[in-house]
Length: 205
Image (tube, rainbow, N blue to C red; front, side, top):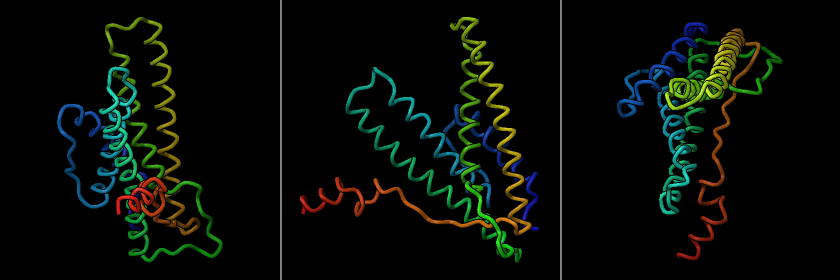
């Protein structure tokens, strides 16, 4: 078999939690190899995107800075989606190398493993920042109670999503589900698809 599903999901979620904590103190890095290197890079784009989104919502930020942040958000979001597909491509390569082919009539899943890993990445960021809220000394008890309830729900969701990913990976290894990579691209970042971009190119020419 190309991978142990349970062990792989554990490594992915451990990576996500550990790097979120580390990257709040040092510049984002990627010390992993192979499949986890790809997972870490995808996770890093979520980390950068999260914090740009925080800046965008500050009433103290001027219009010029907001414009910079918006462009950064578009770029990180494009990279984030590109790397979701790279995660799926890496898994598909492992299945192919192991000679695993879907059985006739194998079903497709509504969400790919890469998309589930992306959601787990976001969950790790949400849990980290909720934990920060829980530790605030300037917040009252009602705030802490609300945050604690949300943390509990996030941990439950993270557990359920992790288990669902394990089950999906097992189904892919068994061939009862199939994985397709569609290699999509967001239209607003494509200069041949976004009217404001291709019309601007024509005017500039």
